[in-house]
Length: 330
Picture 1: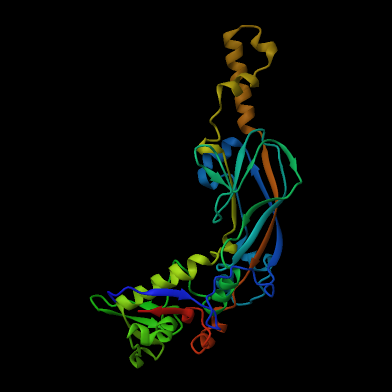
Picture 2 (picture 1 turned 90 degrees about the vertical axis):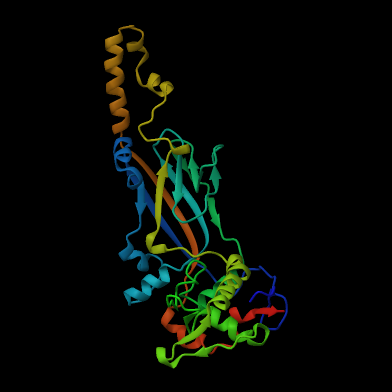
């Protein structure tokens, strides 16, 4: 495995596959979700990262996102592997009189401050915005991503080294599950790699004995040539939206300019230091205890993978596997 290899991703006809067009036959599912976050500055400050946020009811996520599976395990598997195509804020409404950031956990930021802090969207003051604002649009090869989800629903870029792999301390090989993408790549490139993999009957017939270096090479090739060009997955059952102040400011961090505006001109003109101090304290308390809210209508377009159990049998015999389309040449 010390040789250098050239790897090309090709389609089933043998042609170079550099087409990043979206599949017209694969329609995304669309759902609108109402997000309503309430509280006040004092509460949000006290609760820290668990304060100003909205989180979906995980037990109802399947019904919300159109996943009709009855098995809890299957339901969780599908929702955890959703491929988000786009997210749009259809409408927003807030009574917060300052700039706040809205972040959808798990999605890359779309808007940034001068210090580099990024969020999905900045709300710039109280009021209603009815003009739709797209905060996420999928990049990568949609068709390839959907095909990967169908053929390898349990495998992602982050778990290729551990999912379906048995490690033996001190051994120069791994036991790799028969439906692992690396197995299909090795089978498709046995001649080029000069590697013959053997099925180990001693492990219930579902595992192959694979040299560690060969396995690592396959995983690296799959990640660099296929997965890095496909959209990442998202866990819909953990959908979370949170509010932040720009650049890490705390909710109780009030500027001197703001403090001055809280006290009425009539009281400030008395020049009574004690009276002004008492009035400022009361005004600040009212300000941080004032009920606040942010309401958002979010539109999601996404795709869900097939159930893992429906793919295991077919993936081991499918001659058109994505991982088999990586051709290795000496």
